[in-house]
Length: 136
Image (cartoon, rainbow, N blue to C red; front, side, top):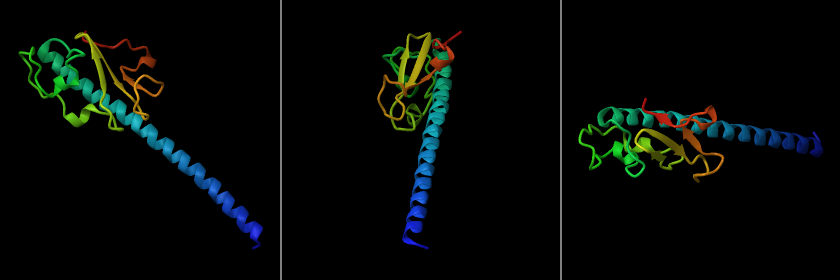
């Protein structure tokens, strides 16, 4: 083999490796997004149990910490309704929680760990036309 042939083979292998690494990184990121959605479903189940016992969801001010420790105004709290490690996304950011007591919305900051941009993940999924989980 000549030097040129060896350089061509090395360049082709480098291009192939770069493509494979990019594809694997995209797959890992998609797996974290799916894991986040599953985690939000677990939090939603804890919120449903909280609602069954307290006739409402925790308010925004009480936050998801109301699933771990009894808020002062909850007389029939029977928690904890979750574990502290379940209240954050796979990137290590705590879920953002908003509620008026009747509906709620959970938001993950996504991979860039900054709220308010296009990679945020919400429950219920706003892309599917959800207006917030309701306690009907």
